[in-house]
Structures are given as C-alpha cells and as structure tokens.
Length: 144
Image (cartoon, rainbow, N blue to C red; front, side, top):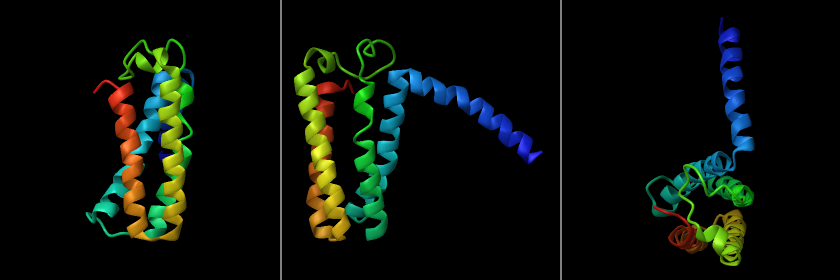
C-alpha cells in the first residue's frame, strides 16, 4: 500500500516539475523559495537566534552560491506577463538588471569563501553585504 501511495504521489508531482521547467515564472519562483529556505537559517545563526554551526553555515553558503546562478535565466522575454512580482525595469533596463545580478553573485561567492573559514566575525559583514544586494535588486526590480 505504501509503495502504491508513493507512486501516486510521484506521478502527481511530475506534472508540477514539468510545469516549472517550461514556465519561467514558476521556475524562478521555485528558486527564490529555495533562497528563503537557505538564507533563513543563515540569518538566524548570524543574529544569534540559533546556535552557530560552522559546518552547516558553510554548507548553506555553498548551496546559496549554487542558487545564485539559477533564477536569472528564467527572466525571459514575455515572462513579465502573468502572476509575477517582477517589475518591467528588468526588461526595459537589462544592463542595470545584469549589473545587480552580477553584484549579487559576486557577494554570494565571497560569502561562500568566508564561510569556509568558519570565522563568524568575518561572516557577519559579508552576510550583510549579500543582504544589501538582495534589497537593492528588490527595490529596483521587484514589486512588493
């Protein structure tokens, strides 16, 4: 019975995965959902709201670096239509959007490097730098 239930669940999930792969809005929203799931515990560790675990933080920073490479390809022409919080400036100011993305990627890569040291005193300001890139992009390119 458990095997049958699992197969049904997988069969139902497959169309959603296919939709995410073909619909750029769904695909980028999925990546940003993973962003939140990754950054959340990192922020709690940096703020002291949960115990700092250097190995876990480094693992999360590596995951964030991987995620930072993904959503941008899904801002394709025409994907400004539909249920999206993306502002038109993404498409009307592509050079500025690319610069914001490149800055974000660079700061996340630095965070991954600093996280590998395990030194929380160095991690805190770099985590803040990453958050600033997120805010800057949201301010310019996302409707809240």
